[in-house]
Length: 441
Image (cartoon, rainbow, N blue to C red; front, top):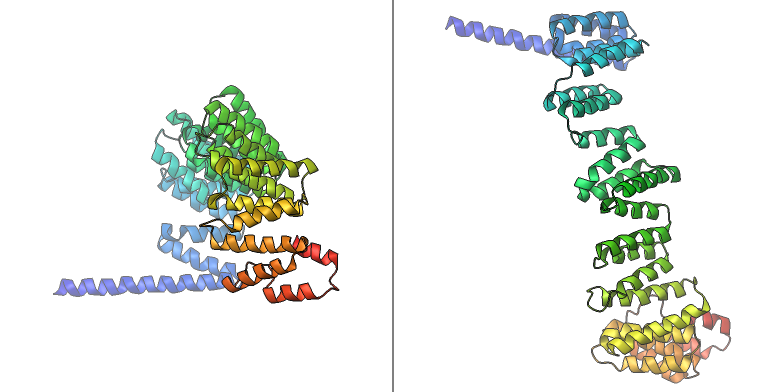
């Protein structure tokens, strides 16, 4: 029973001591917050003497903030002698020398740590982590590099080094590390591209990547990951023609189905590089009808040419070429509900760009009579046909179509006139031809 009382008393004393220490820590932090670091130092010094190692970190950092380097050095050296295998104290001693302006002494300590580094992956990683935690990125990198030599493996610590180079924004080292890593790990190419995008700052950085890639392609032409990355580099520089040439060369070498080219064409279209997209789709189509991408590429080719025309970036001969493409598509696949979209676009091209109003009217009349055409597409075709009726001086036929669409589709597609507005348009003669042309287009 007496022993139990002793245990209880000791427990209360211990907990009371911990509570007192916690209160003193709070007070020291308050002193620091109030700009009274000397008073905080006195508390940390007292706590350190009571329980040396638990309060070493806050004590030593306060000494450094007050530039008391000699006292910090003395305390740290004692702990190094007491714990020669615990490298955190040696790293801190180097940090003390660095803050005191004695870089030579700091480097000597760090270099000794590197020289005594064991060929043990865990210890190498632990020491590098301690350097990282002390904000010494350069020596963390050196530890990993030395670890590779000791372990005779240039692929060790790749993830760690990539993160350190990215944190340091060391563009050249980050680039080299990824280019060494990607051939065995091609699935990480998107990660590499994102990393480069985050650290590269202009054309000089992308030129550096291009030079490195061309050098590696020349050395190892069978390594396709470098060719893929070179295509990406050209895209970042808006050199779309070079990007396509590079991608086509790789596709021909691999004799693939053109999927990568098909995806690349979408990027071209998003950047309004229509000529490159057209050339890409034409390459896929040239592979023949057995390709699964033949029909999609045919459709996208025409859509891209249409985008080029509607964007105003076209020559007069482009219009006739586009008309021929639409007619070829309709000849190959027939005029039916599946190709009604092409019939509508061809009619608009003929009416508003080639001024073949009769041909356009005839084609849209045929389109609106098709079975199984999608309702929204049918409504659009009727509205287009109504526009052409007006241009052909057939206002009552136009009125009939507009009223049909308004009845069947109360919520008309954005930007189209309601029937009531169209009637007003028809009966107000003061509307100028220019206004009509603007509305029609």
